[in-house]
Length: 236
Image 1 (cartoon, rainbow, N blue to C red):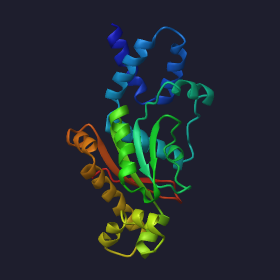
Image 2: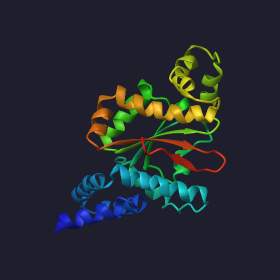
Image 3: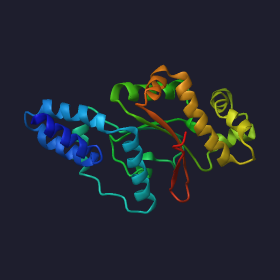
Image 4: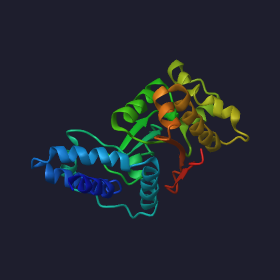
């Protein structure tokens, strides 16, 4: 009987993470620790990459339509996260100050594992961070999100010399410049997202194994600054 309750609770909360945090805080004041752990184990099984992608799509729709949800009391939310985190998606994106995944996907703290690097490139540091989330937290969806008017992509597009450190980073983007069929920075940015997704699979044994077994899906995406809409390329 207890197992059926745990399964039902996890299924409900797999699409209502904010409510789960409130529930977790409420019952943590009692001796229900083992049940919380069991619910979380089942929760991770319920949050497939499809379910996670649907949550991101729905959150972005609320964002660009200006119908974002009221979040639970932040003090309570912080309290539930002290002991650990349970993100449902990994977002590899740019460091651009106009690109804030928690806003773009109408998510709260603890819901997204965000890795930021200029040009959203898959280098050793960003790959290691993503591997950590896949292995440690069982996250099943990785979104590689570029954006409109990306300065790093533009610098690679123009062949700028910005010093050793930035030049090393731009080297990850330059293949996309050569692959573009017409001179357009945003087109290069979209190609760069797909390239970063391919590099993740090629360079990470952990990610490649999870993708091969179908446990993890990598989805390139492109954020339109003006409209707030995210275009997902989930055909890849």
